[in-house]
Image 1: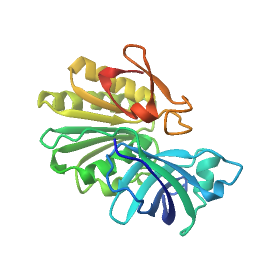
Image 2: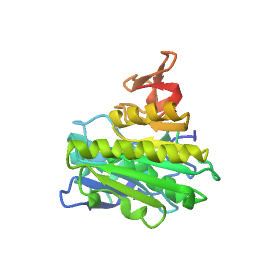
Image 3: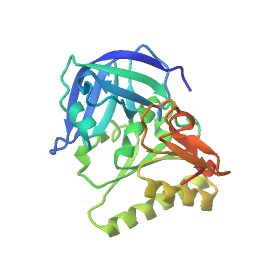
Length: 258
């Protein structure tokens, strides 16, 4: 993990994705930190939250460069509704980078498994990986593909997408995930997954079956980002409570109960 910092950053750009105006890439001025690991997250609190919304919101780091840091979000509640109204120059308090990120094994075939908004951390992962040709991503999604930041991925790594339009499409996607994991495990590869809990449970089951090295990024609700509020507690395999924000959000698949 890297030392977190509290920064006051400015909005550079808020870019809508898709035609619904409910998916956005938020680009902020570069924070004071330079070291981060894909899979880590930030706590964001725009000044526009005022007194009505006192708590910051957690967002995975989608990508970061020498000029900016980017987060990707979907409008789901009051906080993200306020964020969708941000304009260039608006002030945002940022605490991070927080948590533990994904492993990077330069010479290992690495399978990225994403469900829905779980695509976000893999943008930065693909950009930061020293051998992107060793990466393969399987992405399952319900909304149209242009709602997600796949434009940064399709020309860089092997990319497959599965659009869920009916329940049977979900079953096909889960079957494809198992097959891709089986192929990767045969080459002593690594699997990394981020997405909804039922999807992560399926990946965890396949990892156990295939005896494959696998990491899972949990999407538990968070309030503080430091482990103080105990609002994001999960359980390790020995039933010990673990704070997702501090010990995760990325866990070894054989170390966590889902």
